[in-house]
Amino acid sequence: MEIINQQKVRRTDNSLLAVTHLTQLLHYCTGIGGFIVPLILWLTSKDTVEGMNEHGKSIINFQLSLLVYILISIPAILFFGLGLLGFVFVGVIGFIMPIVNAVKASNGEAPSTFMTIPFIS
Image (cartoon, rainbow, N blue to C red; front, side, top):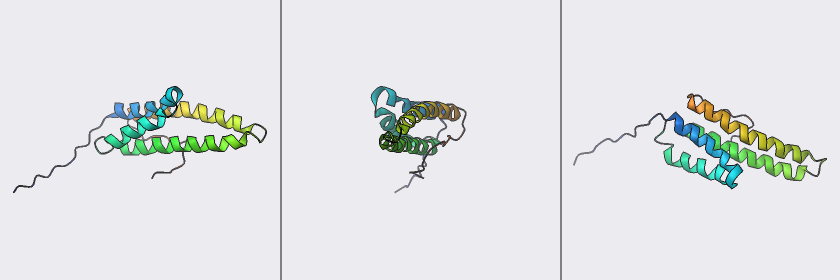
């Protein structure tokens, strides 16, 4: 019986990394799609695409951080409307950071972790 050593070949696909970051913008169309689609892309290709594990963890941490900021902003509305500023902040950051990270991913750079709580390390 012959044993064949099959090593997984990791490919470099910066365009898939950029698309994975841009799928976060599905929140503005579907509500939850900005979390589910990047999660599926990360889980299916983290072993085959170089850098996908790092970028995927960054995306999931960022989306969970935005959820925490929204949950904090809800009761903060009672405190002089500061929660409204929190909602505006989450909306702006949730729109800008995926685009910034998509550009970084297409250039082969590491993703930015601005305002990200590291849930998954």
